[in-house]
Every structure is written in structure tokens, then in C-alpha cells.
Length: 164
Image (cartoon, rainbow, N blue to C red; front, side, top):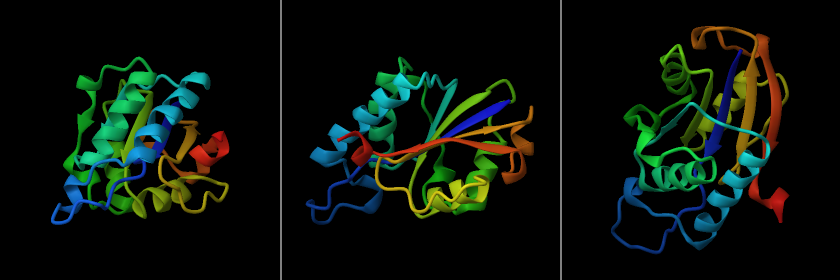
């Protein structure tokens, strides 16, 4: 069994002129929503063995805030440059190359690729993931290379507005 959690970064700030897309930080709402969703994941018993994040500041910040709620050492977050600017096939490749011994993985990245990736793998429609939205999928297989819509079960689809 493999379990994948797909998390879109929390709300980012657009108020800093001249800052690159890669370097945009979380805004106040994002700094609130990321730990909130981490708490929700913890309440569901989510305990990732590995967290993979985009290198973008807003994604790393989200991954860090969520990891603290999951008692996962933020220093152990794997930053993968392929996640930033990825399409759904790139994300599949990232997940397929996760260490074989990892059965529970949390992937933190960006839309539209994350929503397309979640919809590609889920038998139930997900739609577009809002900021800090998360999808949990479980796969009836032993290898990340074998994950597919055909062996997937949607565990949940959650986002901050469900929590307010």
C-alpha cells in the first residue's frame, strides 16, 4: 500500500514589487492556513515518512508549517527543483522516484499541475485545489511506479474553508 498526500501551497503575497514568483512569501492568511491544515492532517493520523516540496519560498514555508504540526522535522523536507514549474507528468515522475521504502508521502507544490495530477490519479473528480487544499490518495500497490487511477482510493479532499 502506498499513500500520497497532495498539498497546494498556502496563500502567497503579491504585495512586494519586484520580487520573483519563486521568492513570493506566504501572506497572513497563508501563515494561518498552513498550520491549520497541518493540524487537520494530524487529526486524521497522517504521518508522512517523506515530505517533498517545491523550492519556491511559499511552498517551502507551507511544507515547514505543516511539518511542525505533524511532528516531522522540517530539516528532513526534501526540496525537489522539478516540482516548481512541473506539469502533471513531471509530478508523477517525482513521486515514482520516491524511495521504495517510503509508503507515505506528502507532496507540496503548485497549481494547476497539482490539481491536474490529483485528478489524473483519483477515480473521483477533485476539481481545482484551492490554496492549502490537500488530497489524500491510497494505492493498492507496493511500488510508486505502479500508482494509477485504477488502483487508487480517494481518502479525502480538504481545504481551509472547510475548517472555518
